[in-house]
Length: 240
Image (tube, rainbow, N blue to C red):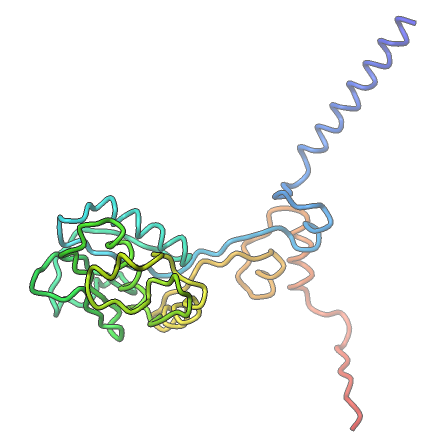
């Protein structure tokens, strides 16, 4: 009996080791069922092109807050944001490596914001924005106005009418609203900027931007999408 138990234990252990070995050879499934992975090839990402440069020209609002808000806008819009120190003048335009630029200044003689949408730059004036929430809301507003989203129907939108600094306290959110996305995307493209894309490997292959395949599922999809047809394509004409 004891020998039988030992033999069973050894057999089970050998089977477990064999299964572990096979599992190690299998491609990563990215949390997807095998059937879905075989059909789609998993999820891949394409980085966006271009960037928005936020140029800090003042000391009233901490640069850490500016960087935090810029990073959040970048995540919301799936595009690149960069914060740097600099100096603003009305003839400065935007940095050469920027698709859009937002200047952050502190000037009592200036209005709350200036926007040159055609030139791709805007200015946030921090004078009077001594509350963090006010700055965050105004930065979103100037970004949206600069990139082309002038309004939103959402009652919580930061694009509601504002004529003086205190009215920013009544703005409910500093987020980009869903109904602003299309206008922003269109104008970003006009300025040579694109958002990051996330799609299935199959979709990426069909659109022509898929990276080289990394597992057996992706190799099969790559071959199927790119291989030449072996038989003539038959076109059926509709009878009138």
